[in-house]
Length: 416
Image (tube, one colour):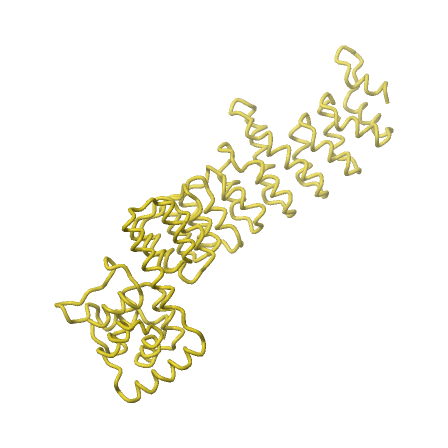
């Protein structure tokens, strides 16, 4: 073997072996000798090409790892039946590709792209994952390859590209948000260094809770006020969204008041500390929180008793606008809820969800369905749903419902 190596690597020896001589000599060598040749960066390209077809997969793996291996041999190895061989090739090609400048041989670069495309579609997920990890931050990779990896059905493959690739446009991202079924893919998009307002809206509309949570936690994400409103609508009934919401920087006073309407008091205190509100404003918010908590403290026995009481009162025909307004004034929240359910024909649990939605239009529609006045609807917005005054829906001409019957039926469809 020593004489063979001397022949192969001695550039000054005029008796260097030809490819055929080296091949014939290699066929007679031990596997350990061929492995040594496969690993050495000085090995002639022709020898490495020959070793790329060796029956021993460990030798082919070493050839795949060797950066001196000619691109023609890499093409062979991209179709190798050994996963380990293709893994090493994926690691090498993905690592060196960004360094192949436009000044390199065009043919080599084109062949490298073909190999990358093949590896990006490899049947073995680990191969695709390595390509994605190596190329995730590069802006020199063909867009087609990046999109292939971004649409992969394995999270370990698509996530690095979705989170880090600078080549994915908002159009690309919105397409993926619309069609992907990979759990965790949207969260990867939400963690991107820069998230535009349009992407934030698309993520919010997906109703993917982990993605929305990651979006809120991403301080670089641009979120429009109406998108934040949609997030707050979701967050009322999704407790996992509460902590990232209160940590969100630069919240508007309106958003702070809405969040304070449904998160735990400890989180409200944290939110107020972060936003450095004026003392009188903070005190008002905390007072409303204490009132909300007090109003909600009704045990199961009380609920059953109040349900029976409400049924009796409705059957007697005494539940009208004056009754509801007096009950609100006396802080009889649960009795009001039970009465509204009976008057509207909507289940009690659905009435609770409707109130918790913090949507003025829905409160007004509920009152309309219960055949109560718009004046009562105003009281319900203020005293039952604790909606901020700036979000109230007011009466038309001082007394009439401002929405059409069709509009109000639409608001109640989810709760009927």
